[in-house]
Image (cartoon, rainbow, N blue to C red):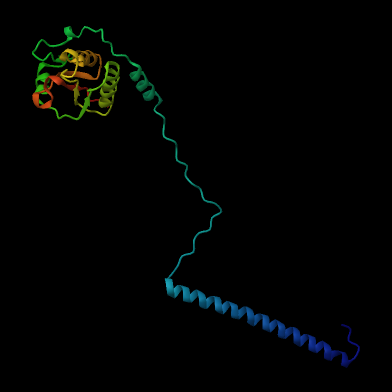
Length: 212
């Protein structure tokens, strides 16, 4: 604004006064807002107690879990075991002890071990009942049972093959075959006919290597 006379100063003075008033009002508004924020902060602190501000970060890093290794060799071994055929043609009679129950013990296993097995020295840990199974089903079930039991670290198991009361001629169809199959399993260290209380002539007590 160009001032040419004293009369021109009055509008200028009014404009300056209005500007100062507006500035004062704005400062008061800001001050009032700050006082209110401070009061609210104090009320919050009095309500919940002292607080610690969180550290600001730009991103969060998550630890990635490594996938569990696949036991491929073990799986291959297990598949090979499942495919392994237990022969019915093996001459088991030459491998059995010539006692009344035709017990079996692998080379290096003492007679005392067989005696302990017969007396129930080791606690029974698992059982397989072959009743109702045909030859091929029984052979597969027995191979899998012995393999799994040894992998679990079991030492003493029972295999129930039956006494043949329900078979033609009342002959125990599986009794001889189970013995043939067992001597072919490297996990089997010895076996004996079960005591009368454990199944008698219809079952075998089997001692395993117990190495998982």
